[in-house]
Length: 326
Image (cartoon, rainbow, N blue to C red; front, side, top):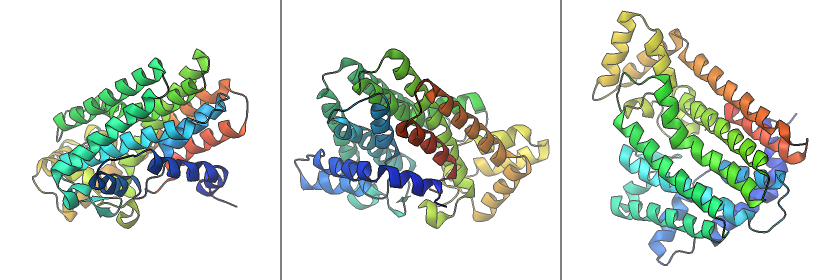
């Protein structure tokens, strides 16, 4: 029996081929350096979940035009721009198993190529002549920036609670996935109820996606994940598995966690201690359960649509969030 990933890939293979082509065709840089850096991050192993969600959302709402693949690359460009900027801010050495772009081309070029990708996204969206689409995209870009700033301000903040964590990931991750689904519906000129349902679907998928991503930092194989395990902890990012463990820990265990989190450098032994305490207090399972709740909520948002190939694929993509390994 084919796995979930294989089932999805078999159904969307041609869409992915066309999305890949559109990513190159719509880049249109003036300088070769821009092309080198942009293609390095764009074609280094991304899963194309965001553009695929936009295309499927549009199709679910009856879209039969020819701008969906072009519009879909906006979400990959925006995502790539944030990766370029975030790796620089975080001082990350590796991205998707490869050296981070800034370690090859330097900080100035990396920042400016990220800016170029943001500009291309706006230009592509403007071609729709849709004020609602442009408005959502502008609002989303602002939210993503604020999410990263919020996370930066709370590095190593032991007082960060689950509510604040959800606020960060809503802006940092969920809003772009939400926008992809919402704009897909708007491109199809769908009624407001369908637009809102797909926006809600995208929000819940986005929250679950980031929670699952945060789990991988403690559960994945580094060679599969493409970056060092425990990178979030070393960068001072408190994610839900740690937040939950801190809240549930005994006074002694909480003190041990706090000491390691606040340390300048975290050794392999320190990380294993943290991982052991996270497992002791159920942080991994709690995060997995919360993510699963959001996946179920996402699938419920699709119930206003008739059963179709597109609805099934969107349900499968929601489920895929929890089984991916990178």
